[in-house]
Image (cartoon, rainbow, N blue to C red; front, side, top):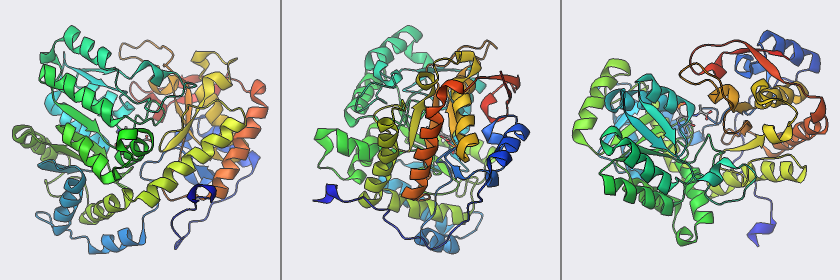
Length: 458
Ligand code: F0G
């Protein structure tokens, strides 16, 4: 009977934050001031902010209570002990190294194991992961299954690693040049798509054949585990916690941004099995983040994450979370808006290339659509396409594999009527899609250009 009822937000609201309503004229002026880069908008000019699900969620009453318990001792804080125990409850790695966010964990790990000539395979590297690898002179290579690159194709695990491609890459480049194999759960850049437990076992087998360590980029581990539970028949009887632990058992370590499935506004960690590697990583941690019992965080942040990790594996929460993402996706599909299917965990990805086929790829159809959603209704999404990935380390520009606009849903933050409003805005933009024009870049930095580039209409 459960499925015929609306799946309600499994929380009540105790504290509210006003949304400032803006006019079309105000939004037009904000866009011009921002150089048509939505990252440059003041957030008070945004009505529904779907730029990211990272650090933008609402904390629970228990998390705010835990914040008050935070112990700010420089060394040996009980807040670290609680944090470490909460991480190990899900990911029983011997060494848990707190960092201020996910990319700090990446920076530390790749500083230690990266370098010129090294190659890191991943289903799809997130942009900070790729940038931190390339910054050391190493190479980041994506080996997602071919289905994972086709937005309109249905497949339950579009985040899966192409095992044959991984094997071929290891043989071609030599296992001595591959310090680690990565798997990102869920595959954010590929549409928030999950990786099956079976596929992860396959990756482990390939790694074992070549004696390579396997690392998880586990930012959205709970959403991945819920989708495994729903879509992988062999796991239907398992709890989310059991699935997470089964994934952890296959890995040698992980990087994590607690701003996603840590349900916190800041934080992350690096966890490893290897004692010597942990020692070297802690040395870099002390140089760049802080003492090993707080990393780049306050004790109160460690408490918020510890509590968040208990809440994020709750089945009622995850059922609502995944269903509310699908709700947005289903409505857009019904309106003939092309999206990446099936809908993933944390976001709906509009296929801007398919929606705006008249815009040349180097005039950034994804950016054009993201701008239009803001112009229409103050909805801020994020281009994940040629602006983000088009500039190669050698300076050339080539279209990315896909031009998507991600509508990322902050955790426990917006209600169904906010999402209904977003649906209206997207539908309205879709109805006038033929009039939407492309953009050109007028200024850009050498790396991670999407954060600060400026644009002008073509
Ligand atoms: N890995 C993945 C898969 C991510 O999605 C992110 C962040 C990171 C690593 C880095 O973590 O931000 O804490 O340093 N993704 C955010 C996003 C920024 O909007 O998708 P961080």
